[in-house]
Every structure is written in structure tokens, then in C-alpha cells.
Length: 316
Image (tube, rainbow, N blue to C red; front, side, top):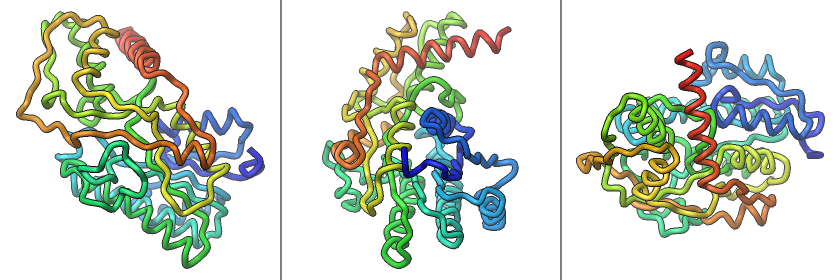
């Protein structure tokens, strides 16, 4: 990790699910000068707070992971907030990075940036071939504007920024809050809680026909650090595991791993979201040698075990 050696690195969102893993991976590679701004100290939606962050941290490199995000329900209930907060955080962090002359800015996008009916597997060149799926379009478009900004700043100012597009993440330490969790933690929580309460059924949104791709959080963190070290081009890069699984298959797998024996009730009045999602991940491997390592069932098993341990601790 020669490029990152001796650099002062700011990781926004460094206290979050992905951020903790990125910080851990940086430390694993021997990087010690890491600044993690906390939201209570720096409201990144506020430009003055962003300016103060740069003054306090004096970074050489910024890895911008901070985001306001949730599952289909949270996206549907908060389209305005998710658009504004994510747009302002990213745009202001990159602008102040340029003005402060940092060496590199790593911006994180989302698979939600892609058009609703993108051919599978999603290739980076398909990003602008349509409008995103409606339930997450405001969030996805806010994030996609960071790609526009990144490329415009490289063209006009020679500013070294890169843009990464991860799929949905999962793993130990994920957000299990039912009001804003993604599908894997939401399903794990439903199954484990049903077992604990003796419930004989759980309800799942949609038809189960939609497909998704998932990436273990430690793999995602490794990809981000590799890109920060090695990738310096304007083209966006997909970060994923290169497979897809239907929600119905996912539910069956989580039911098996949690040991839930009850019925599954599909609430088809609720939306499925985007019909299919899977990334073409060849560019990441070609450009900075990233390939996902963690098997999906093993990653799910570890996530289930972590959640069960965390619920036991809460009870104690």
C-alpha cells in the first residue's frame, strides 16, 4: 500500500457498518493516521461544518462513505430527505476537497444508480441508459451526481477522484433496525425474533421474484481500500460478487440458517423494487485486482450468528 503510506486519511461514515470495516482494513495494511468525523461533531449537510472538518483533519485522502440510506420502505417514505442529504454531503465534501488540494477523493455510489431495466449483468457503460427504479431513484440519482462531479472536476481541475458502485452489503454489524434496514438483516431479524417469540409465521414484502446481488462487508472494504491505493481513472467501477439470487431463494436460505420452522406469508401489495440486480465485476478485477472471496452462505451464517449473539447480550 505504497500510495497510502504516510497519508492522513478521512473516512466519512467511519463509525458505520461499512466504515468500521474500511477503517479496520486500512489499519490492517498499517495505515494509522485516520480521522473519523462523527455526525454529532460535523453535520456534512452543512457547508460550514464540512469546511471545519477539512480544517481540523487536514486530509491527504478522503474516503466518503457517509450516507442516509435504507430499504424499500425507508426510501419510499423519505425520498426528499434521502436526495437532499446525500447530494449535499457528497457535493460539498468533494468541493472542499478540491479547494483544499487533497491528493485523492474516493466517492461511493450505489447499485441504485442504475436504470430500472438495465440488462443483467449491469455494465458501467449502462449507467445512463434510463431512469432508476422509482422507489430508490432520489437516493440513486443523488449518488450518481457524484460521478458527474467527479468526472467534471477531473476534466477541469485535474482533481483525482474516483467513483465506486457497490451492490447491497451484508455481514456482522449490519443495521437491523426494522425501520431502515436492508433485506438481509430485516429477514434475519424477522426469523430470529419469530423463533424467540414463538410466532408461527413471518410476513415478507413482494412476490419473491426479484433478484439481488449481495457482497460481504469485509470484501467491500477490501475493494474500497484497493481502489484508493491503485485506481486513478474517471470511469466508474462496479464492486460486487458477480451473482444473483431471488428474494424467494434468499428467504429460504435464511429460514434454513436461522432454524425458523413457521410459514412465510408474501405480502404482494408491497413493491418488489427493481426486477433484477447483478453487476459485471470484471473492471474491478482488471483495474485493481479485486475479486470477492467470501461465499454467500458462509457470509450469511456469520451474520445470523452475530445477530443471535447481539440479541443475547441485549437480554443480559
